[in-house]
Amino acid sequence: MNVLDMIQKNEGYQIPDEYYTLSTEEMEKRVREIKERLGEELFIPGHHYQKEEVVVFSDSTGDSLQLAQVAANNKKAKYIVFCGVHFMAETADILTEDDQIVILPDMRAGCSMADMADHHQTDRAWLALQELFGDTIVPLTYVNSTAAIKAFVGKNDGATVTSSNAKKVVSWAFTQKERILFLPDQHLGRNTAYELGVPLEHMAIWNPITDTLEYDGDIQDIKVILWKGHCSVHENFTVKNIENVRKNHPDMRIIVHPECSREVVAASDDNGSTKYIIDQIEAAPAGSKWAIGTEMNLVQRIIKNHPDKEIISLNPFMCPCLTMNRIDLPHLLWSLENIEKGNIQNIITVDKETASDAIKALDKMLELA
Image 1: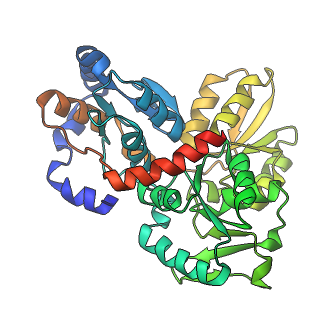
Image 2: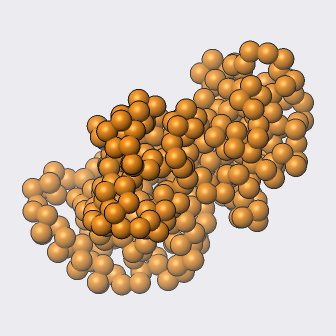
């Protein structure tokens, strides 16, 4: 079931307006009380990009896969209220036990990148690419993808990747076949392959809208086929942003996420996963200066947690991830109160067949990592 189907299924259960008339203090009080009453039956994972008003009530914060794994290891929790986006809750449902219930506080919390690849598009692409290249391709998908895409990759003997382990998984894929298909984020795929020594001229783009391969040259030279998708947040960091920091803050170190474009990554001082960025700032000496190219909620949290350092966003006009921001304190409270009323809404479920194939792709990655 896709996100639109889920929204339509739950359209009668949208958050009542009265929640927005409550004071912050009242909502915080109710959330604390429900957490205390439910105890170990309730587990709230919170992604790094969530609003502070939500993160403060999270039992664990981290990246999407990390949170799904923590949820899976928490066998005592009956209710997992995932404060993130839809594909993250799907992964949590795949990895947790059948009797554990995964809930997304707002069904509108999707991911534009994940939505740039659906199973209809990948089925068409795979047939076309097999005709062009035969059995020479291993499919890989970023964990920031739907369960259906993870299942497609697992069914075709591929693996998932994270921004932390992408190099390791891509290296493995090249020991299996001559080429890789990388979904759905072209930038992470391009940056990873380039850092492993694959020239840009050996990379092509698959356009799922036109069902065409975008490449100038002999297609037999292609080693990496990049799905034409991107993160709407990280693509908004530009080389111009870097030039402005170099001009106005010449002693600042620039660190960005590898979901940024190749040009931005190349012009920066360092790049790495969300965890890598957090770890680098934490390990940096007091007085060090940083410009960070990643989601604004996280950047603001890093700034708050490190008053001994001078930290700015690489793009001062960057907005937080809009879909991540769908999850707010009123939606969290509403979800928790529905649990107590026995009227649970926005349950995320992945069918058995899809989950089985998706686990193959996840397990391959975890085996390699």
